[in-house]
Image 1: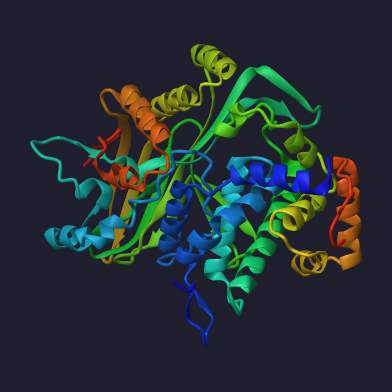
Image 2 (image 1 turned 135 degrees about the vertical axis):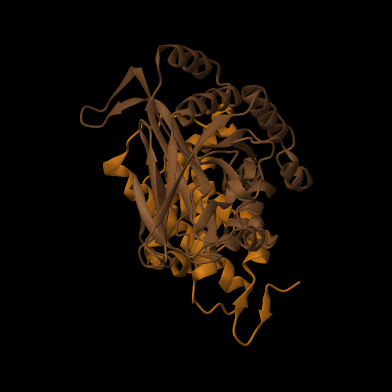
Length: 293
Length: 168
């Protein structure tokens, strides 16, 4: 082809490549978050990642309200306390925007040393962003830990506090000094291998190219692992006494159907910022359960 | 509306920069990475860098060139990072973007296969963004003669005839 023909063909090719409104929206949102606390690299591997919610809590003054209702040496996980469980319930719904996958990968096991793929094993790595901020009285510091098979805390942070090298941080525990209003956002990492039944379904979906089906399957697999996961927060107070609270995650009734419906809605109209904004009204996909009081 | 709210300090409104130059960044990132998912990651990194950058931006053309340069560098950084430590084989990983369902045209495959990757960028900047080889040299940090060489070799690889060609 001659140069003009190439230019024309190439232009047609490139016109199909655009930054989606959803991508622009969540990039702007992530910049808003970065303005409040250093976030370093914010990676979004999943098409459904939503970075809308963690800031809302503070915008509504919920932290102050919760703190005001507490007296003496006491504390509570804000994500739990702000939902005000009633009638002796030990569980509250956490909306999708407050608990969602931020980085995901899944695939057949690859051995780099032999450059071969083992199609008998599927490894999964998925991270859920979660705001673990606590509110309390006389709190000096909070130690967090996580228990469960293949789970860890994760976060992305820049080691220079600005553009440049980005390091991934994972751990089973960490301690933060208590600071009213300062968010404690970490990812909850799930790293696991699919069992036989899950893998059979994975193989089937892999063959069909059903991306929504695959994402739903992995979300259901996550929910099973999260059911065996506990996050524990231990507050140390000014008088050096301490108090511990432990929480777990439980998939809401109809989890699979709701998740699939969410993906369908998203796929139908991915560039509609209006419907994106209305997601605040979606049902909670997980319940946060207080395991010990 | 101008992206430059306070011209004396060259302060850029990143939100408006995303609206104005988001597609440009996305296309350069897509050409560099070869798929939408990775291009979206690069997109976010680039605007995060703009957000944190202390670079003095003179005007909108300077901003555009800055964004393209950072996008190219981010792509190279990412590609370089992946070589020795890939955990999941790319072909076996779950593709989460619609692009995996869309067959690429032979032209797109030919462009994707250009090596070294700078040639894809040069082709894009020259034929789509309309930059001259001197301007591309400034953006990429290469010598103009090197850019011309890349362009020449890329044209050969893509079998672009220079019959009735323009200024190069």
